[in-house]
Picture 1: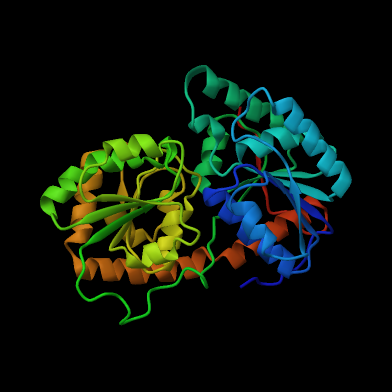
Picture 2: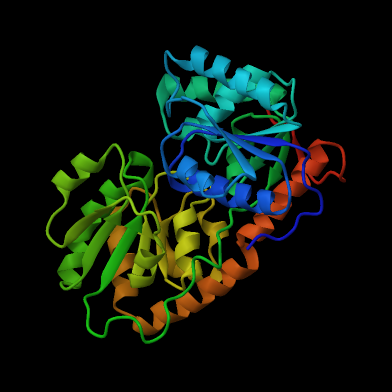
Length: 381
């Protein structure tokens, strides 16, 4: 699966919290590609979850360093930062790549620019909160930019969100990619002959992913496509609340080690997120040649073929629009098949994880001074 990089970094330390969901899958794909290209790869992350389990399967080419860190900032931040500094001192990396808000917070506090630092927000933290908390998160990101050698955004929209928030610095936009060898269409003739229409939502059960909006939309879908079924794949803090709200013909599958079979079984894959950088689930679904319906948040338009946008994009927080889009796709088999074919080709052309890994390696080369620069300087205040 990996393409060899033009230049593998001497030693890179990835720091990641969370350890599940899309961020974990991005880190796994990136680390897999870098290790296959001969890089000296180290990862600091909490010891439980999808990420450490997947990294353990990669063998001795990847060194895992347990880092006990909670998902959100809290009283333990000082200890988490100190422990991460010890890991950095022990590893001696040429470059640190911090993934998501919490790792970005702890890593930049620990390093304060002493080691070249790449920060990848995977959606900005201030979009997840409001009021004073959002103000403080934006202020922190503006301040931490001075300790950030490069900010990597997964979409032009995410870059624009950071720019409008006044976060200055050196940016590179690298769209998310998925493993197109793992996420593949169903083998013709193996799908069951007679079955009910199936809508699948893959994502952490949390406010960000908007499953509560989907459950509010579902009665309108069921009224017009009575035989349809909805399956929510994933787990998370809102699981109990969502299960209590779900009506008939809604099932909860729990966390799946491999979501590909769910994508292949679906007639439509839906992700009603409130915010994203660029969500992985729609890319994975399209790689499996399945049509998607998603909310028009950061990264969504960029992740879709242009022809899909009229069918696949709906406003966030709009159950009625979400229901209309799902019904329209469920009722039109030819449309579903056309969207699936075009989606698969779009992912092959623009969102292959091998190309993403090569682009990240190019950023490392720029940061370490061994490759020409292709970054953007953002000085908006």
